[in-house]
Image (cartoon, rainbow over all chains, first blue to last red; front, side, top):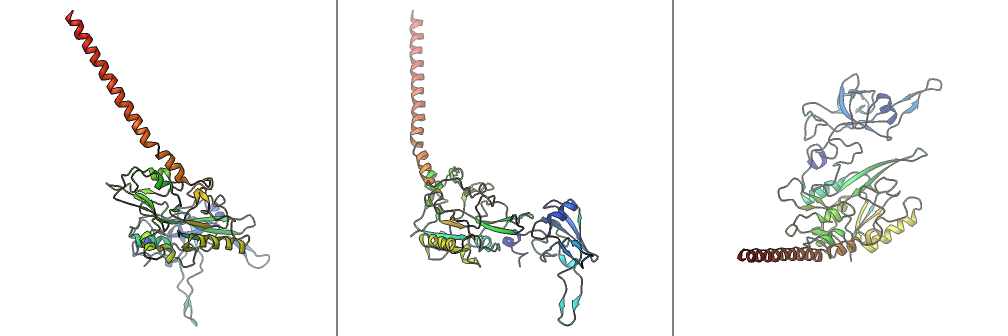
Length: 122
Length: 270
C-alpha cells in the first residue's frame, strides 16, 4: 500500500541505511551517498543516512571487548509498486535479500531482524 | 470567535499523516522525489505541498539525542501581510480564522509572496495560467463545523483545533504544568500581531536552526498588515503622480514643438 500511493511514496522514496557518523567517517561516506550493504546471502544498494540515532556499542567479556558498529535498514521496499527503492525499477532494493532464512522451530517466528552486514562505499 | 490550531511539537511522532491528509483533502498530486538526508520530504513547500514536517536532530552536550518534528504551513496571521498588499483583494481573512484565496480575482502579481514574512504563498511556476497556492486552513471544513483535515488525522493530538483564546490558555497551562519541557513562549501568540497557528516547542527556533527557514523570531509584534497597507495606500498617489508628470511633459513638449513650428514658418515668410 505505502509503495503504491503517490502521497506516501514521495515521503520515503528510496531505500536507506542508517549509519553512525563514526562509521561514515571511517568509510568516507557522505550523507545521501549510495552505498552497498552486503551480507553473505546477498547485497542491496541503499542511500546512506548519517545520523546519531544509531551509535556504536561495546560488547563482549571483559578483556575481550570490542566496539561494534550498528547500522539500521528499513524493511519496506521491493520489486513492485511506484517506488521500488531506487532509480532502477528492475533492481530489487528489499532488505530481505540480506536476512537469514532461519527461525525458531518452537514459536515459528523467523529471525529476520538481526544479522551481520558490511557497508561499502560505491 | 477566531479559530486556531495548537501545534505541540513535543507530542508529534513524525508520522506525516498530516501531509497525506492535506493532499487527500485538497486532491493534490504526489511528487517524484529522492531520498532526503533529514527525512523531510518533499523538501520544499510549493504549489502542490501546503504543509510539511521538518525533522531536526539536536544532540545535547550530555549525550542525549532529541529528534524534533516541526510542522510547517501557512500561519494564518490575524492581520495578514498578504491580504494587506493584495491589490485586487484576492486574499481574504475570514471571520473564523483562515486566510483564503480567490482564484478568479488573482492577477498573478505575487505581491503576497514578497510580503509574507514566513514565505508561505507559492506560485504555480509550471502552469500556463499560474495562480497562488497555500494552506487554506481547510476553510470549507471549518465552515461546516469540522476541524482541518491535518488535525483530524493527527494520531497523537499534536495538532489541536479550537478557539484561539482557549488554546492559548491551554498552551500556557502546559508550559506552567511541565517546567523545563517547553520553551516558555508560544510562537504565534504575539509575533506579527498574532497568528492562528500556535507552536509549543521544547527549545527555541534558533536552537532548531529554523529561525531563517520559515520561523523567523526577529519579526516583532507589530501586525504586518499595517506595513502592507501603509505601502499599498501610496500606490494610487504614486501612479497618479507619475502619470500626471508624463502627461505634463507630453503637453510641454507638444507646446514647444508648436511654438517652434510657428517660429520656423514666421521665418519663411520673411
